[in-house]
Length: 200
Length: 200
DNA sequence: TATATTTTTGACAACTTTGTCAAACATTTC
DNA sequence: GAAATGTTTGACAAAGTTGTCAAAAATATA
Image (cartoon, rainbow over all chains, first blue to last red; front, side, top):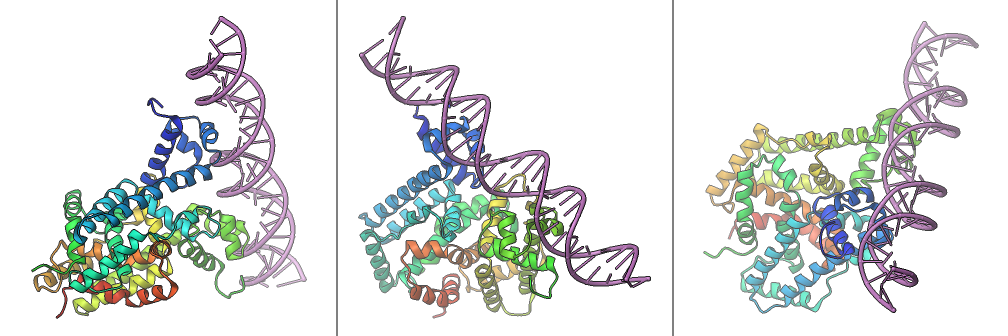
């Protein structure tokens, strides 16, 4: 593998890349092994089974995400800055691993999924507090009035969808590389303009 | 199969259901055959290969969708009514076949995909005209000013994402069945409130 | 250096998936 | 009713995937 890092950690990192960045969700272990430059059996040695490896890396990624988000929910910034932070973090996250969300959906439909328990409710006190903040901002007239959870859904939608669907959208809407760059640049501003009441 | 309809058409319809509604995108032909209540070999008889069947039903669905949308783009309604029609149609479409879009993404990332050519640019005169209408509405101050294509992206995002990701969102945000029904009911209104400049 | 431990590899067997083929069955046509 | 055509089925072979195991290679330990 060529690096000085532990082999199992390298395999995990490359698996995350292979599955959730490149999107080879239903590839064989052999293909992953080729991508990672290791013998296929070695993956079994470290992780027993494909299913198990998947569970481990999936859990790590979800956990990392939950941690980052609750840190933002709980931090000392004012509401708008928090939304900024959420947008920045999630844009970065989705651009790095666009297929994590795809995998989420597919799993959430399976009854038998062992992974299902990983998609747990936020249920964090930080999240509940953030919902109250949303409500307060709505009362102040800074946000359009809706159910706070619906605000969250719209926020996620406007962040994730354009990134995840990017290749499809580019084709359908005939978006050139230049246009795409332009859109990417204005993403954050555009999202905020939709969600916040205009300031003038 | 029990119906009076042609077997091959029934298989296609049930395959659409199985793959794009239920989401069993990577199931075996045997599983599809069980679902459709036919002998597995019969599917080969009518469609030669799994790949071929997929291409056929995928193409049919995309074609139907493009037709419906361009009819709306070209119809005689005013702009807001057209947006209403788009929202209504796409909500119906995504709720019926939430996995069509998932499949789109996965395919769009594959270099080798024979299906790729199906995701063609809209390129229709009707679509180009609609983009101009968007621009006009922005000038009139009815819509927030952005790149018209970005308006389309936001529109698609706000329609599709909440539906496709519904099971995941319900878990993460702890949305009860009642809340979900409420949100569903207000979907259209909520989308329009975000995209159109407020009327008061 | 010799021994123990860990890591890596190739070979193997069980299993699944796929497409083909010929035979069985059903339906139409003469 | 017999022949021709179309539909459905079970059996089969080829290919691929997965996990295990014992042997080889590398590394650590005494």
